[in-house]
Length: 416
Image 1 (cartoon, helix red, strand yellow):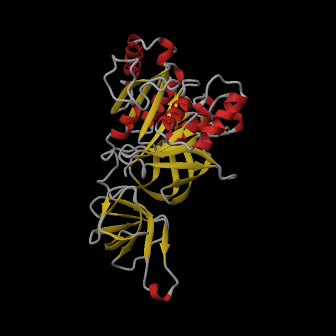
Image 2 (tube, rainbow, N blue to C red; image 1 turned 30 degrees about the vertical axis):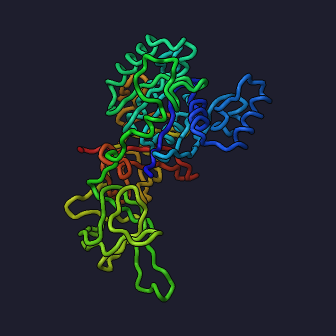
Image 3 (tube, rainbow, N blue to C red; image 1 turned 60 degrees about the horizontal axis):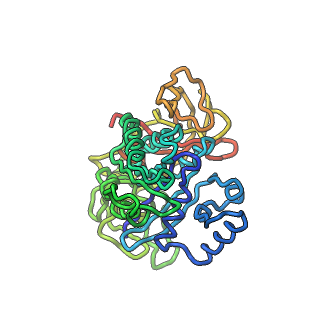
């Protein structure tokens, strides 16, 4: 079945965890012991109802404070599709967690409290989803039961959000009025909102078209591992394992290996289940080539007439994720696809105010949760595409040189 990755976003107390809990509960995707544990904790806390948000808020601090801190991943499936959910926090200080959860998402679900409307954090998360090039956006106007399911409230919030989103790069946007607490329009259509003619949230998640979201034009295969079995019956086997980051590969295709520039053909493509006739993003496969070429981890297999950009000077948008500020001249480890290199910050072009979209060109550093445009220089050439063209070959992470802790996430810019 097709897999859809989606993530939540929105301000504090907009009901993200409750909505996910309701979605899991009404779609019969939780076990009895999980529900019993949630009911027991809800009773111990003195809640008058079963708090379904506890299905995703697993940390003790989250349950004590009634907030989401970490990114919680949940998995479920319906007869139509499989899902991976990333429930992300709404607090400003946990913006880095929101970026992490949405970086691999096919769809972002932005929640808006019907009583409060569009607030600063709503705009912040919508912008970040746009910056991360998440293909689909669903705006769930939640807590409609607290405004008597008033259509005028829904229309007013939709108009305000649409006006703000017109300044962003969002290609597909859908609005759904819901009540996570009562279950209105979550799994089934609500009788309380007869004026709403759209689909329920689950139906939209099952039917949203994602097949065209991945880049199937630019063939990219970063080599992760060279497989040379020691068993005698496989002594001639040489395979290159990795994840296809773009395009389609078939046996017989002419390919080029970077950085050597040598060309050969694909002899076979192997998977755990056996050889296949076609492989495409984001499949993980082992590729065998017709000629013995010196290939190692970090090299890239592509098409001779469709090569990625090769360079050491990079322009990128970076979200900084650690308290130690990033300044011009700082060194970091940079991981791009399967290659680690050393990078230096040559220039901070500007820091972006994600609330007003104002560019502060006088900025001299990026602090925790800041987003800015940087010019970087790396020690070895990278084989990349712009993030707009390919989210997999256009992204990277920065790690602190001393602790090796992930310190930033970047999106490469380019002419395309």
